[in-house]
Length: 370
Image (tube, rainbow, N blue to C red; front, side, top):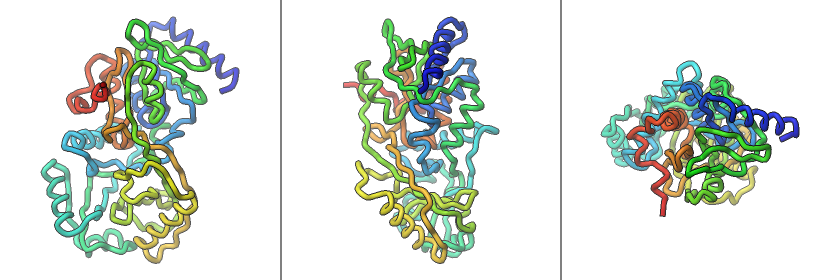
């Protein structure tokens, strides 16, 4: 951050102390932080967003972008994710999601039928497809014997969505700002301490992804996190071959409107438990393209880009959202793409004293307290 920017931020912070309007400081400019800023601003808060890197420079910038509730840990987690889908729709004109549905065939036979029954029992829409029906929908695919179509699912460019939410929020966005600490006075969070000065706040929102535990630790708050690096591969543009998101034993893949194919390097990446990446980016890209070529025979695929980021996964694999201290709201989760807009709504409700609502009750940060 340059000297001039630091001086401007310090001046803004001083002005904020004199301002009678409620002020929120959001740490993190990924999809979670952007959604929080958007909903806080709609609620009448004056919002400053502080980020050490660029907007969506972390996990949001290297996200597959799948919005779904078919991946879940338990019924409470499923209900939360299903409402996350609804929250994306509530973004209306600001939302950038595409609702192309997903063709799912990670398992076959009795296992696939059992999975469909589980989803239907939860009220989730599921349509069985035969091989011929899959082939009609995706003629370029080496079609499986049978599959499930999940019509409510979609995808979004998480980085573009974060940028759109920040722009719509009217928040002050400060990138290149190193957050050093969260100031607490009388047991309440009152400011964010940066290298450029203090930003006073009536509410601090900590949405810093994998950087969250380090800012909580000095406050005596433990938040264990799993090491979950992720790699995303994008191919050169090809002719239209995938009208739907595809999730199968060969991994997940979707086609962007530009024609590029986008795929995580890990098969079943949402359930990936690898703690480190042992292959070079080139080797991962080659392996990913080889898997895609087997799924889409006859399609000329060449890797164009590979992105890597550490996914923010709390220690029990479940989302964290709630008030860690008076005036300090914590939001960290995987998948932030599915849950980001819903988390933003919950943050604004907490800041206004209305509570996050019963859906979030199992996911409060206090569950990690010793």
